[in-house]
Image 1 (cartoon, rainbow, N blue to C red):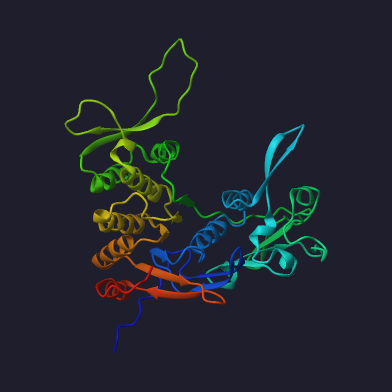
Image 2 (cartoon, rainbow, N blue to C red; image 1 turned 135 degrees about the horizontal axis):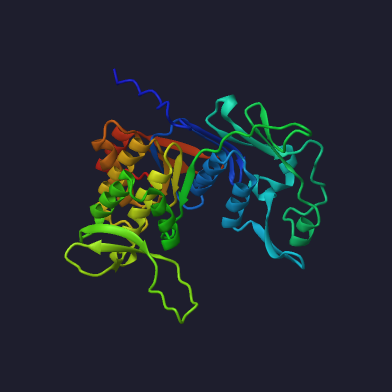
Length: 366
Protein backbone atom coordinates (compact mmCIF):
# COMPACT_ATOMS: atom_id res chain seq x y z
CA UNK A 1 0.00 0.00 0.00
CA UNK A 2 1.25 3.53 -0.71
CA UNK A 3 2.39 5.64 2.19
CA UNK A 4 -0.31 7.88 3.67
CA UNK A 5 -0.08 11.56 2.80
CA UNK A 6 1.65 13.57 5.54
CA UNK A 7 -0.53 15.66 7.81
CA UNK A 8 -0.79 19.38 6.98
CA UNK A 9 1.79 21.56 8.70
CA UNK A 10 -0.03 23.15 11.69
CA UNK A 11 2.16 26.25 11.46
CA UNK A 12 0.77 27.21 8.03
CA UNK A 13 -1.83 29.95 7.97
CA UNK A 14 -3.37 28.35 4.88
CA UNK A 15 -2.94 24.55 4.75
CA UNK A 16 -5.53 24.67 1.94
CA UNK A 17 -7.19 27.48 0.00
CA UNK A 18 -10.76 28.18 -1.11
CA UNK A 19 -11.52 31.31 -3.14
CA UNK A 20 -15.02 32.30 -4.29
CA UNK A 21 -16.22 35.25 -6.37
CA UNK A 22 -12.90 37.12 -6.26
CA UNK A 23 -12.02 38.99 -9.45
CA UNK A 24 -11.65 36.42 -12.25
CA UNK A 25 -12.15 33.39 -9.99
CA UNK A 26 -15.72 32.15 -9.55
CA UNK A 27 -14.61 29.27 -7.39
CA UNK A 28 -11.26 27.62 -6.75
CA UNK A 29 -10.32 24.97 -4.22
CA UNK A 30 -6.71 23.94 -3.69
CA UNK A 31 -6.97 21.02 -1.25
CA UNK A 32 -3.42 21.33 0.01
CA UNK A 33 -0.74 24.01 0.17
CA UNK A 34 2.85 23.36 1.21
CA UNK A 35 5.46 25.37 3.01
CA UNK A 36 6.33 26.54 -0.51
CA UNK A 37 3.72 26.22 -3.26
CA UNK A 38 4.58 26.90 -6.89
CA UNK A 39 1.59 27.81 -9.08
CA UNK A 40 1.81 26.98 -12.79
CA UNK A 41 -0.59 27.40 -15.69
CA UNK A 42 -1.18 29.39 -18.86
CA UNK A 43 -1.45 33.16 -19.00
CA UNK A 44 -4.83 34.38 -17.79
CA UNK A 45 -5.66 31.25 -15.82
CA UNK A 46 -5.64 33.14 -12.51
CA UNK A 47 -2.25 32.53 -10.89
CA UNK A 48 -1.66 36.18 -9.99
CA UNK A 49 -5.27 36.48 -8.80
CA UNK A 50 -4.55 33.71 -6.30
CA UNK A 51 -1.64 35.75 -4.95
CA UNK A 52 -3.88 38.83 -4.72
CA UNK A 53 -6.50 36.83 -2.82
CA UNK A 54 -3.93 35.60 -0.30
CA UNK A 55 -2.71 39.17 0.18
CA UNK A 56 -6.26 40.36 0.86
CA UNK A 57 -6.75 37.45 3.27
CA UNK A 58 -3.53 38.26 5.13
CA UNK A 59 -4.58 41.92 5.40
CA UNK A 60 -7.86 40.90 7.02
CA UNK A 61 -9.76 43.09 4.59
CA UNK A 62 -7.90 46.32 5.31
CA UNK A 63 -9.16 48.91 2.84
CA UNK A 64 -5.75 50.23 1.82
CA UNK A 65 -4.74 46.70 0.75
CA UNK A 66 -7.91 46.30 -1.32
CA UNK A 67 -7.17 49.64 -2.95
CA UNK A 68 -3.53 48.77 -3.61
CA UNK A 69 -4.46 45.45 -5.26
CA UNK A 70 -6.95 47.21 -7.54
CA UNK A 71 -4.60 50.07 -8.41
CA UNK A 72 -1.83 47.64 -9.38
CA UNK A 73 -4.26 45.75 -11.62
CA UNK A 74 -5.46 48.93 -13.34
CA UNK A 75 -8.90 49.04 -11.72
CA UNK A 76 -8.83 52.63 -10.51
CA UNK A 77 -9.71 56.14 -11.62
CA UNK A 78 -7.63 59.29 -11.31
CA UNK A 79 -9.77 62.09 -9.90
CA UNK A 80 -9.02 65.71 -9.08
CA UNK A 81 -10.44 68.49 -6.95
CA UNK A 82 -9.28 71.90 -5.81
CA UNK A 83 -8.63 70.80 -2.24
CA UNK A 84 -6.57 67.63 -2.71
CA UNK A 85 -5.41 67.89 -6.31
CA UNK A 86 -5.17 64.57 -8.10
CA UNK A 87 -5.94 61.38 -6.22
CA UNK A 88 -6.71 57.76 -7.09
CA UNK A 89 -10.03 56.07 -6.41
CA UNK A 90 -10.07 52.27 -6.62
CA UNK A 91 -13.08 50.56 -8.22
CA UNK A 92 -14.31 48.20 -5.51
CA UNK A 93 -16.79 46.61 -7.92
CA UNK A 94 -13.76 45.10 -9.70
CA UNK A 95 -13.12 42.93 -6.64
CA UNK A 96 -16.10 40.78 -7.61
CA UNK A 97 -16.36 38.27 -10.45
CA UNK A 98 -19.61 39.83 -11.72
CA UNK A 99 -19.91 43.55 -11.06
CA UNK A 100 -23.46 43.58 -12.47
CA UNK A 101 -24.67 41.31 -9.68
CA UNK A 102 -22.01 42.06 -7.08
CA UNK A 103 -24.64 43.06 -4.51
CA UNK A 104 -26.00 39.52 -4.65
CA UNK A 105 -22.73 37.69 -4.01
CA UNK A 106 -19.93 37.70 -1.47
CA UNK A 107 -16.23 37.08 -1.81
CA UNK A 108 -14.81 34.40 0.47
CA UNK A 109 -11.14 33.59 0.95
CA UNK A 110 -9.73 31.12 3.45
CA UNK A 111 -8.76 27.58 4.27
CA UNK A 112 -12.33 26.28 4.30
CA UNK A 113 -12.70 26.31 8.09
CA UNK A 114 -15.71 28.54 8.80
CA UNK A 115 -13.94 30.41 11.60
CA UNK A 116 -11.06 31.39 9.33
CA UNK A 117 -12.81 32.58 6.15
CA UNK A 118 -12.67 36.24 5.15
CA UNK A 119 -15.94 37.38 3.56
CA UNK A 120 -16.43 40.62 1.64
CA UNK A 121 -19.80 41.91 0.44
CA UNK A 122 -21.94 45.02 0.35
CA UNK A 123 -23.78 46.40 3.34
CA UNK A 124 -27.34 45.15 3.71
CA UNK A 125 -29.86 47.07 1.66
CA UNK A 126 -27.37 48.50 -0.83
CA UNK A 127 -28.01 47.31 -4.36
CA UNK A 128 -26.86 48.06 -7.85
CA UNK A 129 -29.73 49.35 -9.98
CA UNK A 130 -30.58 47.25 -13.01
CA UNK A 131 -30.16 50.24 -15.30
CA UNK A 132 -26.61 50.95 -14.15
CA UNK A 133 -23.96 50.28 -16.80
CA UNK A 134 -21.89 47.13 -16.51
CA UNK A 135 -18.70 49.17 -16.50
CA UNK A 136 -19.03 52.22 -14.28
CA UNK A 137 -17.42 55.30 -15.75
CA UNK A 138 -15.52 57.90 -13.68
CA UNK A 139 -18.51 60.23 -13.42
CA UNK A 140 -20.92 57.59 -12.10
CA UNK A 141 -18.27 56.09 -9.86
CA UNK A 142 -17.19 59.34 -8.23
CA UNK A 143 -20.72 60.69 -7.86
CA UNK A 144 -21.76 58.05 -5.36
CA UNK A 145 -22.10 54.77 -7.22
CA UNK A 146 -19.67 53.19 -4.78
CA UNK A 147 -21.55 51.64 -1.84
CA UNK A 148 -19.87 50.58 1.38
CA UNK A 149 -18.34 47.17 1.84
CA UNK A 150 -18.94 44.92 4.80
CA UNK A 151 -16.37 42.34 5.87
CA UNK A 152 -16.40 39.42 8.26
CA UNK A 153 -13.82 36.97 9.51
CA UNK A 154 -15.72 33.84 10.40
CA UNK A 155 -18.74 34.98 12.41
CA UNK A 156 -17.18 38.28 13.48
CA UNK A 157 -17.88 41.53 11.67
CA UNK A 158 -14.62 43.41 11.15
CA UNK A 159 -15.69 46.30 8.90
CA UNK A 160 -17.36 48.69 9.26
CA UNK A 161 -17.36 48.80 13.07
CA UNK A 162 -20.62 48.42 14.92
CA UNK A 163 -22.22 51.77 15.73
CA UNK A 164 -21.20 52.90 19.18
CA UNK A 165 -19.12 49.80 19.84
CA UNK A 166 -15.39 49.40 20.04
CA UNK A 167 -14.47 46.48 17.81
CA UNK A 168 -11.24 44.57 18.34
CA UNK A 169 -10.01 44.08 14.80
CA UNK A 170 -8.06 40.88 14.05
CA UNK A 171 -4.33 41.23 13.68
CA UNK A 172 -3.05 41.21 10.14
CA UNK A 173 -0.70 38.45 9.01
CA UNK A 174 2.74 39.59 7.81
CA UNK A 175 2.70 39.49 4.02
CA UNK A 176 5.23 40.75 1.50
CA UNK A 177 5.07 40.65 -2.27
CA UNK A 178 7.65 40.62 -5.04
CA UNK A 179 6.30 41.34 -8.49
CA UNK A 180 7.47 40.05 -11.85
CA UNK A 181 9.64 43.11 -12.43
CA UNK A 182 13.01 43.47 -10.78
CA UNK A 183 13.16 44.78 -7.23
CA UNK A 184 14.09 48.44 -6.90
CA UNK A 185 17.01 49.71 -4.85
CA UNK A 186 14.47 51.40 -2.57
CA UNK A 187 12.68 48.11 -1.86
CA UNK A 188 15.90 46.18 -1.26
CA UNK A 189 17.20 48.96 0.99
CA UNK A 190 14.01 48.85 3.05
CA UNK A 191 14.26 45.09 3.51
CA UNK A 192 18.00 45.24 4.19
CA UNK A 193 17.64 47.95 6.85
CA UNK A 194 15.28 45.71 8.80
CA UNK A 195 17.73 42.80 9.00
CA UNK A 196 21.09 44.61 9.05
CA UNK A 197 23.49 43.40 11.76
CA UNK A 198 21.41 40.28 12.42
CA UNK A 199 21.95 36.62 11.46
CA UNK A 200 19.35 37.13 8.70
CA UNK A 201 21.70 39.58 6.99
CA UNK A 202 24.42 36.91 6.94
CA UNK A 203 22.00 34.36 5.49
CA UNK A 204 20.91 36.78 2.77
CA UNK A 205 24.58 37.26 1.86
CA UNK A 206 25.00 33.48 1.66
CA UNK A 207 22.00 33.31 -0.68
CA UNK A 208 23.48 36.02 -2.88
CA UNK A 209 26.74 34.11 -3.21
CA UNK A 210 24.86 31.02 -4.38
CA UNK A 211 24.33 32.57 -7.79
CA UNK A 212 27.11 35.11 -8.30
CA UNK A 213 30.36 34.37 -10.07
CA UNK A 214 32.19 36.88 -7.88
CA UNK A 215 32.39 36.36 -4.11
CA UNK A 216 30.52 39.15 -2.32
CA UNK A 217 31.94 39.96 1.11
CA UNK A 218 29.59 42.74 2.23
CA UNK A 219 26.42 44.55 1.14
CA UNK A 220 25.36 48.03 2.25
CA UNK A 221 23.00 50.84 1.26
CA UNK A 222 25.13 53.88 0.43
CA UNK A 223 24.19 57.39 -0.57
CA UNK A 224 25.80 59.47 -3.31
CA UNK A 225 28.76 61.75 -2.61
CA UNK A 226 27.53 64.89 -0.80
CA UNK A 227 28.22 68.26 -2.38
CA UNK A 228 27.70 71.38 -0.29
CA UNK A 229 26.98 73.36 -3.47
CA UNK A 230 24.18 71.11 -4.71
CA UNK A 231 20.67 70.57 -3.44
CA UNK A 232 20.04 67.54 -5.65
CA UNK A 233 18.99 64.39 -3.85
CA UNK A 234 19.39 60.81 -4.90
CA UNK A 235 18.19 57.64 -3.14
CA UNK A 236 20.73 55.34 -1.63
CA UNK A 237 21.91 52.44 -3.76
CA UNK A 238 22.72 48.90 -2.76
CA UNK A 239 26.47 48.49 -3.09
CA UNK A 240 28.68 45.45 -2.55
CA UNK A 241 32.27 44.70 -1.64
CA UNK A 242 33.55 42.01 -4.01
CA UNK A 243 36.54 39.94 -2.93
CA UNK A 244 39.70 41.11 -4.66
CA UNK A 245 38.16 44.43 -5.76
CA UNK A 246 39.15 47.57 -3.86
CA UNK A 247 36.17 49.74 -4.83
CA UNK A 248 32.40 49.69 -4.36
CA UNK A 249 30.32 47.83 -6.93
CA UNK A 250 26.56 48.36 -7.43
CA UNK A 251 24.64 45.22 -6.54
CA UNK A 252 22.59 45.66 -9.70
CA UNK A 253 25.76 45.41 -11.80
CA UNK A 254 26.08 41.76 -10.74
CA UNK A 255 22.94 41.03 -12.76
CA UNK A 256 19.18 40.81 -12.36
CA UNK A 257 19.52 37.39 -10.75
CA UNK A 258 21.71 38.75 -7.96
CA UNK A 259 19.26 41.55 -7.21
CA UNK A 260 16.29 39.18 -7.34
CA UNK A 261 17.87 36.50 -5.15
CA UNK A 262 19.03 39.01 -2.54
CA UNK A 263 15.58 40.63 -2.47
CA UNK A 264 13.89 37.23 -1.99
CA UNK A 265 16.29 36.26 0.80
CA UNK A 266 15.65 39.55 2.61
CA UNK A 267 11.90 39.28 2.08
CA UNK A 268 11.92 35.78 3.61
CA UNK A 269 13.46 37.28 6.74
CA UNK A 270 10.99 40.16 6.78
CA UNK A 271 8.00 37.79 6.34
CA UNK A 272 8.66 35.65 9.40
CA UNK A 273 5.41 34.14 10.67
CA UNK A 274 3.48 35.14 7.56
CA UNK A 275 3.39 34.98 3.77
CA UNK A 276 5.77 35.78 0.92
CA UNK A 277 4.14 36.06 -2.51
CA UNK A 278 6.41 35.96 -5.58
CA UNK A 279 4.99 36.58 -9.05
CA UNK A 280 6.92 35.00 -11.95
CA UNK A 281 9.59 33.67 -9.64
CA UNK A 282 11.89 32.61 -12.49
CA UNK A 283 12.58 36.17 -13.65
CA UNK A 284 16.28 36.98 -13.57
CA UNK A 285 17.33 33.54 -12.27
CA UNK A 286 19.50 31.57 -14.71
CA UNK A 287 18.38 27.99 -15.37
CA UNK A 288 21.67 26.61 -14.02
CA UNK A 289 21.03 28.00 -10.51
CA UNK A 290 17.27 27.42 -10.23
CA UNK A 291 17.76 24.39 -7.94
CA UNK A 292 20.10 26.35 -5.65
CA UNK A 293 17.66 29.26 -5.59
CA UNK A 294 14.71 27.05 -4.61
CA UNK A 295 16.72 25.15 -2.04
CA UNK A 296 17.49 28.48 -0.38
CA UNK A 297 13.79 29.49 -0.50
CA UNK A 298 12.59 26.17 0.96
CA UNK A 299 15.16 26.09 3.76
CA UNK A 300 14.72 29.75 4.72
CA UNK A 301 10.93 29.52 4.60
CA UNK A 302 11.05 26.56 6.99
CA UNK A 303 13.50 28.22 9.34
CA UNK A 304 11.58 31.53 9.46
CA UNK A 305 8.09 29.98 9.46
CA UNK A 306 7.12 31.67 6.19
CA UNK A 307 4.49 30.30 3.81
CA UNK A 308 5.53 31.02 0.24
CA UNK A 309 3.29 31.08 -2.82
CA UNK A 310 4.95 31.74 -6.16
CA UNK A 311 3.96 31.63 -9.83
CA UNK A 312 5.92 30.54 -12.88
CA UNK A 313 5.73 29.94 -16.63
CA UNK A 314 9.18 28.37 -16.83
CA UNK A 315 10.05 24.69 -17.24
CA UNK A 316 13.55 25.43 -15.91
CA UNK A 317 11.92 26.88 -12.80
CA UNK A 318 9.73 23.78 -12.37
CA UNK A 319 12.75 21.49 -12.84
CA UNK A 320 14.85 23.39 -10.31
CA UNK A 321 11.96 23.47 -7.85
CA UNK A 322 11.43 19.71 -8.21
CA UNK A 323 15.11 18.98 -7.61
CA UNK A 324 15.26 21.18 -4.51
CA UNK A 325 11.99 19.83 -3.08
CA UNK A 326 13.15 16.22 -3.48
CA UNK A 327 16.48 16.94 -1.82
CA UNK A 328 14.81 18.48 1.24
CA UNK A 329 12.58 15.79 2.69
CA UNK A 330 11.76 17.81 5.81
CA UNK A 331 10.31 20.78 3.88
CA UNK A 332 7.12 20.36 1.87
CA UNK A 333 7.23 21.87 -1.59
CA UNK A 334 4.17 21.43 -3.80
CA UNK A 335 3.41 22.38 -7.39
CA UNK A 336 -0.18 23.28 -8.30
CA UNK A 337 -1.19 23.53 -11.94
CA UNK A 338 -4.28 25.55 -12.79
CA UNK A 339 -6.31 24.95 -15.93
CA UNK A 340 -9.34 26.85 -17.15
CA UNK A 341 -11.60 24.57 -19.23
CA UNK A 342 -14.79 25.95 -20.81
CA UNK A 343 -16.32 26.23 -17.33
CA UNK A 344 -14.62 26.76 -13.97
CA UNK A 345 -11.07 26.03 -12.88
CA UNK A 346 -9.33 22.68 -12.56
CA UNK A 347 -6.53 22.00 -10.10
CA UNK A 348 -3.76 19.41 -10.46
CA UNK A 349 -1.47 19.00 -7.45
CA UNK A 350 2.01 17.49 -7.53
CA UNK A 351 3.83 16.53 -4.37
CA UNK A 352 7.58 15.88 -4.45
CA UNK A 353 7.34 12.34 -5.81
CA UNK A 354 4.78 13.12 -8.52
CA UNK A 355 6.66 16.26 -9.47
CA UNK A 356 9.91 14.31 -9.76
CA UNK A 357 8.20 11.80 -12.06
CA UNK A 358 6.72 14.59 -14.18
CA UNK A 359 10.15 16.15 -14.65
CA UNK A 360 11.82 12.79 -15.31
CA UNK A 361 9.38 11.88 -18.08
CA UNK A 362 9.01 15.45 -19.40
CA UNK A 363 5.29 15.66 -18.57
CA UNK A 364 3.97 19.19 -19.14
CA UNK A 365 2.98 20.79 -15.84
CA UNK A 366 3.39 24.49 -16.60
